Structure formats: C-alpha cells, structure tokens
Image (cartoon, rainbow, N blue to C red; front, top):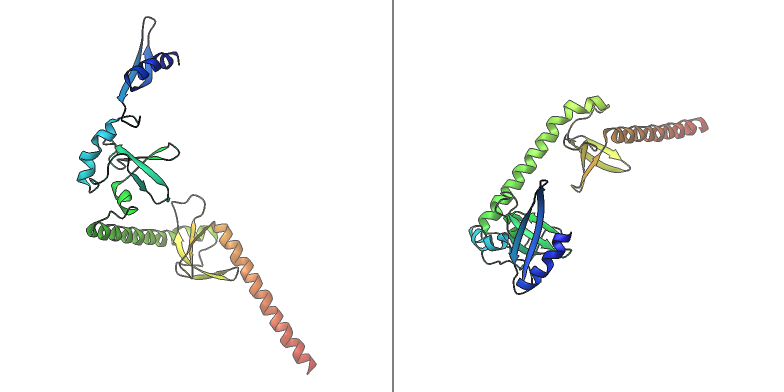
Amino acid sequence: MLVCFALKSVQEQYGIKIHVGNASFTAAEITFKCKCNTLDESGETNTREAETWPHYAAQVGLGHLKVGDSVTLNDGKTYTIKGWKSTSRKYPVLLKGRDGRHIKCTPQLLKMHNSLLGNDEKKNIAAFEKTEADMTKARLKLAWPKHAGRHGLGHLKCGDKVKIKGETYTIDGWNTKNTKFKVQLSNESGGLCKCRPEQLLKRLKKEEKRKAKGAKKIVDVINTTRNKY
C-alpha cells in the first residue's frame, strides 16, 4: 500500500500507469514485480493487447475495427474493444463492458453479433451448429434406455408422448451432463423442458389417477342411466 502511494507521484509526473504485482522477500531484501504502461490521449492505459490488435485482427477479418470501437454481443450489451490476447488461443478478443469488467470472446462470436460474417463463415457455422445439435439428440436417445429404467421410467421410450397438466410433451432423452434435471422433453411448439426423473414419474401417476377418476365418473353415469330405465 505504501509502495503504491509512493509511486503515485511518479505516475503523475511522467504520465504513465504503474502496477505493482507480487513480491518476494528475504531477511535482507524485498523484490517487487512492477509493470509500467504509457497512456493514450484519453488517459487510457496502452497495453500489449492493444498494440497487437491490428496485426491479429486483420488475419481474422476484423482489420476494419480498432481498439476503442464499440461492439455488441449475444447478451445485447455494448462493449469496447481493448485488444488481442495472443496467449489465449480460444478467446483472444479482449473487451471491456460499461461496468468496467473485462471479458474475452472468440472472433467468430464478435462477427456473428455485429453482422461481420462472410457467406462461407455463415455456412460453416450453420453446418457446425446442425452437426452439434444432431450429436446432442443422439446422445440423449442413447442414454435414455440405460438410465430411465432405474427411475421407474423404463416403460417409456424416446419419441413417446406424455401429457402433463393438459399439455403434450415428447420425450427427447436423458441428459447425462445435467446433474439435476436429467429428463429432457419438448412441447408441441418445439420448446425444450427439463425435469427431474421423479418429477416426471409423479406427474404421470397423477395423470393416470385423473384419467381413472374420469373413466369411473363415465361408468357411474352410464350405470345410473341404466338403473333409471
């Protein structure tokens, strides 16, 4: 804390930003890791990520964008480009939100939500998403027979229709990756629904009781009518 306070006057005098990191020490000396950055005209820190942005951005079709430009992502929020983090192979694009929080994303995500994708890239992404969706469906179907029987749902299979609270659902399969809501269903409009196995079993039993009760009422009405005549 005292070191940071002492360096404040140095920062102001030379127009730089000094960051003091970790320290190692012995009985005789102490060594601090210290990083100094120059500042741009707006007072923002010049970083290695900002410096390398033009080089890497041009290679992935983002060369027309520069550090400081505003972009949007899939959450609808606006972010400022801060640079290219070359040490992060998967998420190299460094952005800063209005709340000051830094996030990383892929170049493809940045293009996708800022209308920057080329036709070939659009086709490749669409093909990848379809393949991924098909693989997910296959995994759900394969897992259903292995797990459903252990939870009292062995009499059902993927593709079966179940009625819950008056709405019809189709069984898609068993989601092994979800630790809580294993059963995946889809409604008639294509919307996905996940639930616990015991929840589905409970709902199905209630539905059976409701049907049995309704059938009993019909039989009672028929018998009452016969007795009258």
